[in-house]
Amino acid sequence: MDRYEIAFAGQLAPGAQLELVKANLAKLFQADAQRIALLFSGRRIVIKSNLDAASAEKYRATLQRAGALVEVQAMPMEVEEIELAPAPEVVAAAQSVLAAEPAVPGRLLVAPRDEYMAAFVAVDAPDFGMAPLGADLQDDKPEPQAPSLDLSQFSLAPTGSDMGQAKAAPAGPAPDVSHLKLQD
Image 1 (tube, helix red, strand yellow):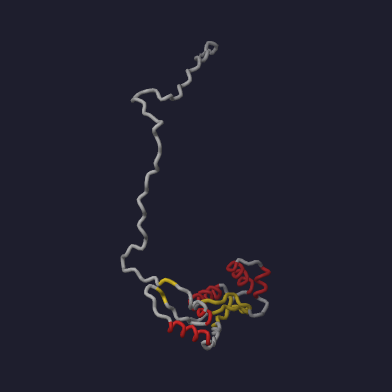
Image 2 (image 1 turned 90 degrees about the vertical axis):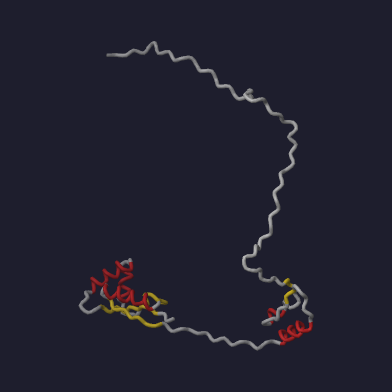
């Protein structure tokens, strides 16, 4: 997948006015006048990189509407070549040990793929197989048991009996309103 970068070197679209383009770019990038002045320094400045083709075209069209001519360039793909190392003697020796051991049912034998994995040849690991489709893989939970409690010291009161609830406080005296008068 090709990746692109957008670069600007201070070029204006035909018929565009410099101050209007600077104002448009300031609004578009939400930048102050000092940063916009750096864009118009004449040097090539990469505005955005690592874009796909559609995003790069959107940026180009938006900046062209603002009055700036930008350059859309494909970014070079860096491919790192890796040379595989030859299999060391340790791996070959571990494979010969595996071939000499008899296969134990329920145990997994793995041939090492490199020197690092050859260190784990002697590890005895269970062979976890695949469960059939729809099998329940979770163990059954035991039924919960009620705790054994000694409740012999408690008894039940007959229905309607007083259980010692707090009595309501008696109502206070009625307020004295004899000094109050209604005026006409």
